[in-house]
Length: 286
Image 1 (cartoon, helix red, strand yellow):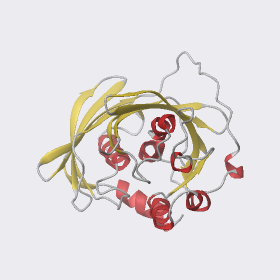
Image 2 (spheres, rainbow, N blue to C red):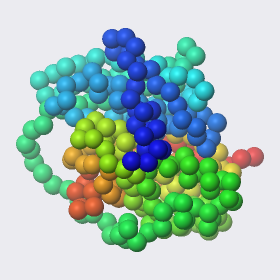
Image 3 (tube, helix red, strand yellow):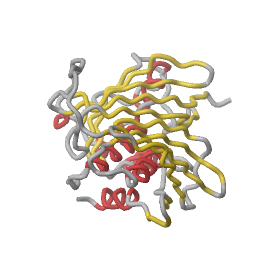
Image 4 (cartoon, rainbow, N blue to C red):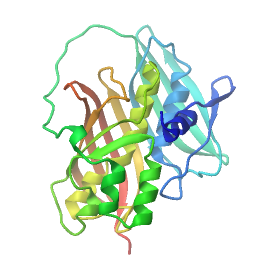
């Protein structure tokens, strides 16, 4: 396991400071605020630690309310909304400096048999044939920017199936992108950890599809400014975040200074594991 992944796992191992109250710290980001995927993943950790292991998470809905301060701890307070026979619901408020920075609701379910179907997995190149981030990013970004982005994502092996937005600035494309990802090391057999890792990664590239539609390079090149507004995920089938997962993303709409991204995450053997929807602020600098 590489050092960056060890650091990310430490980041998700929240301090239990009181009944249903947890504290987390942040890691450096390429923007001067806490990475939204980190807040969502930590909030899901907090919620999951109040739920029996036999009830895995099946959905989450998060709102990002304020930019987080990466230099200050985040306190997560869990509200035990409901403990039913099949479903458990939790609400988590993330607080910094006396103000909420995020709200997250999560639902957990006891395993049960039911009707089963899924849509077909889209075509995608073999992840092992694609360049790593460390190989690909310097081709399209200034050296210092590429270095910071590689460092920020070093815990995850993330590989673009096509040229990312900052590689085709000024050339609008179909608002769709694909990346393969997996944790860069072996993880424990803990279902909550795997869904939290996927939650963390899911905020890295989802709004790229919005940028592609308009030929914008994004935050890495500074031709748009933005931030995540909300984030929703549905976990359909078990998966491992240390095995290859295909993140197939598209943007059906942007308007009013906001862009919508929707995506599906597939296991390499074709099982639909997760559905993701996110809206974010996407503004052109004046």
